[in-house]
Every structure is written in structure tokens, then in C-alpha cells.
Amino acid sequence: MKLSDYAKKKGISYDTAWRMWNRGQLQGERLPTGTIIIFEDDRSCGENKVAIYARVSSSENQSNLETQAKRLEAYCIAKGYQIVRVVKEVGSGVNDHRKLLLKLLEQTDYNLIVIEHKDRLSRVGFNYLKVLLTQTNRDIEVVNLAEERKDDLMQDFLSIITSFCARLYSLRQRNRKIECLIKCLEENDEISSKTSN
Image (cartoon, rainbow, N blue to C red; front, side, top):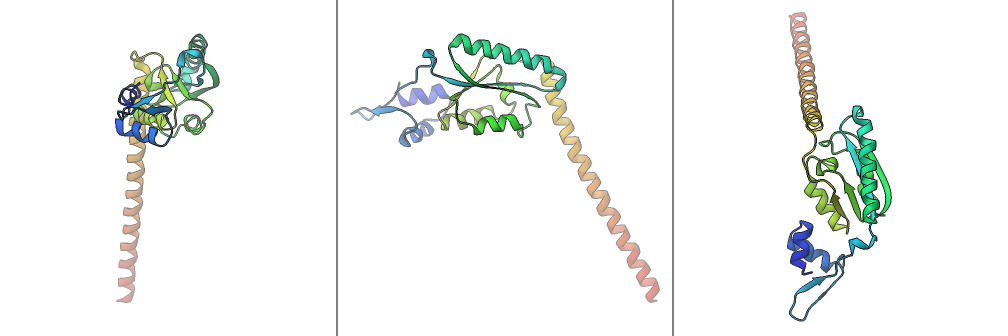
């Protein structure tokens, strides 16, 4: 396939795809006309080593986490993928410090992450993760592109609100401490000025 078609298929810019080809990250050839042809890996012959990533927003949904992982395992087996690991995580989709996800992104013994919905990987920045993985010759396969349940969305919304409230509370506490310190300094200054008179 042409390099421009490859870039569109992977959701990256042509320039990014060209840099990847130029660095030798993509297998292909340049025709005498200058056109770059990329040799696609054949996903249908089961050569893909996959990492399954399943996530739920709270521990209350633990049973859903297990069934989500089992559905993804069945999907990968049906596609003939070689499952390298199954990662199950409980945490908000807006949290960008999920330990198991970060560990998974650091590992390189797979070339495909299989997820049930886009938001299972991340509610924010999914496309950034896709570009990052593409840079390392890995990809993301979303099994179900349908919208996810409202209660998970509400749980993530509440997580965002809670996070902002905690920050505001922390700022208020800091301001109170500063006000108290200023008041103490003013009182000390008044006491010092009275004793010196």
C-alpha cells in the first residue's frame, strides 16, 4: 500500500509515516517514480502478539472486569492472535497515572493492544496513545466501537469533580495557613512595638 494510504489507515500524518519509513521502522520500497510502497503485516495469519487491556471505573464493577477480559480473550482466540498478557485494571479513564497501563505501554513484547471500547484505554488522549504506539510499530484494536454504559461515564465525571474539589480544598487550606501566619506576624509586630514604647 502507498505510504499516504498507510498513514490514513493508521490515523497518523503523512510526515510521521515518512519519518517512520526513513528511520527504517516500516518495511517497504521506493519505486523509481519516488512512490513509497509499505509492506503490510498480515494480521489474518495469527502472527500478532497481543496484550489485552480491560478496565472498569470502580471496584464495584469487578465482576464486569472479569467478563470484559474473558470476552476479549475469546475475541483474540477467534482472530488467531497470540495472547502475550491480559491486563485488568480498576481506575478512572481520566487518570493518566494508572500503574498497570503505564507498565503495559513500557513493555514491547507485543504489537497490538486489544480493548473493548476506546474509553477503556483512555477517556482523554486516545489518539495520542495511538500515535505513540504507532511510532514503536504497535497498534490498538478496538473491538466494539459502540458507546459505553452511562454509569461508567458518570463515575469518570464524578472522579473529575472530586479531583477538582480536592485541589480547591487544598488551595483554601493553604490560603488559611498564609492568613494565619500573616495575622501572627502582625500580632507579634504589635506586641514588639508596644514593648519598645
